[in-house]
Image 1 (cartoon, protein in one colour):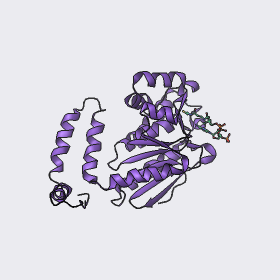
Image 2 (tube, helix red, strand yellow):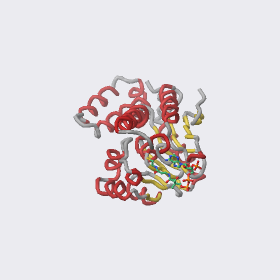
Image 3 (cartoon, protein in one colour):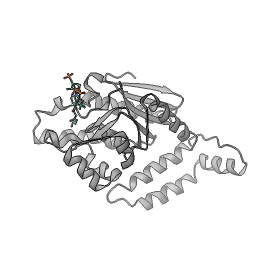
Image 4 (cartoon, rainbow, N blue to C red):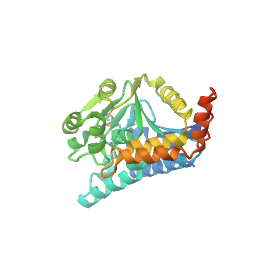
Length: 260
Ligand code: COA
């Protein structure tokens, strides 16, 4: 499938989705959010895709936020709908995908851009990346999950400061905060994400699927994450991958997982 605002490329088990509006610093307008939803859905349903990488085109920005020109004239009702629809279509959607999603943050990740990176399962960044939630400088608050996911990742005090000051942190500060897992030079960013993806691909994709559910359960109100872990752990014992993984270990050979 081809898309207007993104590029999707499949190679060696990895689908790389590149947000492609470089003249607008890859800002997320309605059409781009829909394209991202569709491409992520397609990649998640594709049995050959073992890992998804999300990045931005150009060397300047991952995503410089939601497209301000689209909502500048909105009223209270439209504003609420914008956040609800975006969270459903993209941000909650990506977090709950069963295929691992790595954000490769290649420049500015601001507002909705940082919220998208935070909704991915984990993040790597180039050393020119700058991250922040500037919404309060525009008279709004983060509306795509930023007030929830930022404190989960960096702690309440740091999140409060970033939101209240609308300031930006650089890649090394983000690394120190635990917001990103690794920082490298721009030309090494995708190779690094691909190297991590290749390590993920050696493991059982059905087990990883269960692990994503169990880890996410830790952050869902009213859900007992320990019980989700018990259920997902138990389910693994009914998979071919479990038989293969344990048998391969006992036979002192490398496991060859089918993802079943
Ligand atoms: N929404 C819509 N357009 C955006 C955008 C956004 N979030 N971020 C950047 N753009 C557009 C600019 O309007 C400009 O378009 P133009 O050339 O048609 O005028 C283009 O992208 C380049 O941005 P520019 O501001 O000229 O680049 P810069 O290098 O001077 O500054 C930033 C870079 C990221 C600091 C600046 O673009 C910025 O502050 N963007 C908004 C960030 C933000 O508040 N995001 C949260 C939104 S909720």
